[in-house]
Image (cartoon, rainbow, N blue to C red; front, top):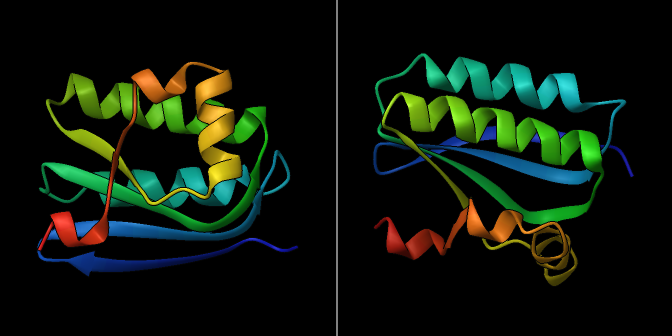
Length: 108
């Protein structure tokens, strides 16, 4: 399945919606979008993984990279409603300790 990206806002928080599979073949697109969102002044950037069906190690590495940069800037990266399969990957790699999971309505 091809990956698709869409940016929207919930309140003042930018949200990157990721649909499909996140792999080494398309990770540059996500990194580019997240870096563009970093240029804003929001204290939080959210990634909606509700339609993400797979994420490989490149995708995980990109999320950790963005998380680390935002933490240095005293900002936050949060994950919206990841599918159980994606949440399992985060737990298997202990990345669930880094990322905060929230529901969209928690921002409203």
